[in-house]
Length: 219
Image 1: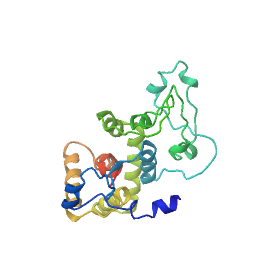
Image 2: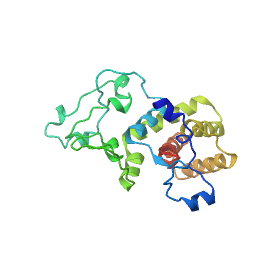
Image 3: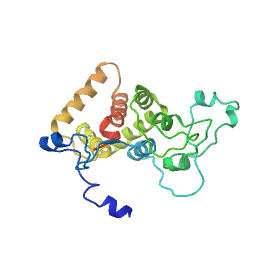
Image 4: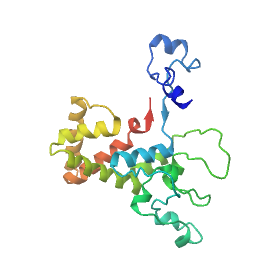
């Protein structure tokens, strides 16, 4: 059944439509196009791990405990016992295996609308609030993964333009246009003019890649 659905014409329809079709059915009541959607919390975390090269594909087995910020642990009555520990070969497994604790949620997943374990959830309703962007830009997890992505791109080529082009393919599954590459190079130059060294600027640029709507939305 899953194969039939995923291979169907309706499932693979583009979100882009003609002006006539949009005028006739702007709400897509007849399902003639794909409704753009933001990836779920678990999908986003998995995607960040994948593009950074950190995703551990091990299947099955017990749940895992990604590193939890000490400030979050401090909200527990017993901070030293509130959360388990997993090695890197376990902590970076898919989010399906992340331990869910009712009184101590993993912040990134909670911010991106992972359902609360306190209530039944027949359907997810994604939100779009500033705290989500702040969590991605300032969170330790995303910043570490962005640095790992930057290291992967540095090792792929000594040419900056090639690194930028590879970053687009890796994060967005498409080639960057020449104009896009020029604008990214100009942005990196501005970061260095503001006091960042070359390595720091490239790390920030990689963080920008995984912060873009194109990374977290499917259309």
